[in-house]
Image (cartoon, rainbow, N blue to C red; front, side, top):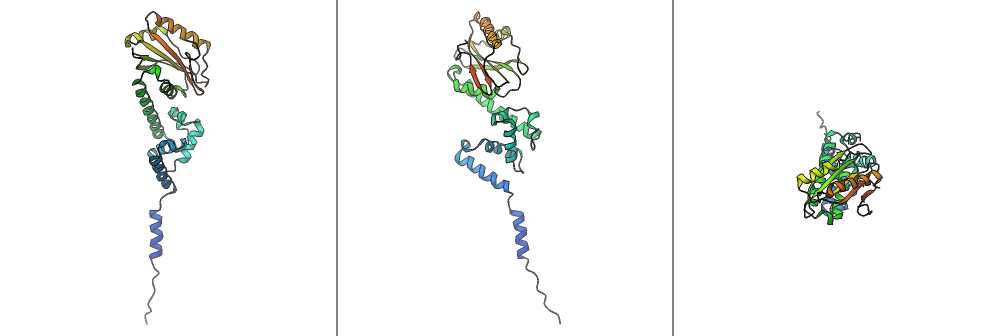
Length: 246
């Protein structure tokens, strides 16, 4: 006699497979929550590492990026320093390759150009906060000394910001006659000198003061005014004018 054989129900097996297929990885839920937080409460509500995470979401689509974000901040010290870092230094952080480094640098340049556009649309010498924000963004974390000139028109609006000298960690060659020649080419009526101190201390040196005086003397005969000389460093921005040095 043939005996009926009961088949084991497949429901339990199918259900477990379904769960395995549809369950989200833990980082996916975190991404969803962080995006919702940004959209509903604004970017200002996010911590620095969370802002960096939202950038990395697009660059690293299938991985938990919180450890990478925190490692970048630990390595460089701040969000602005991460965005200012050289690609060669960024890729030393685990999880960061050339593609991510390139995207981070592109993001930094978008911010810099937006700041430059904002500055160009205003009267520079009366927009102190916009000016210092721009200078800090451009030079605060620069590893080598760099000398720049903001050439201004008769309305004290920005014509162009040009690099006039690259140097080492503690020196950048500056040529007053070259600055005067360029000011004439641009028909600039005034200018603001800017350079950085990679040491982190924005205090003017004796050489900084002497060089500023030489530039002022070269421009005086051309009736071109030097409004200020700003030194940017990790500790902040120093104004020669505020210090009584101009």
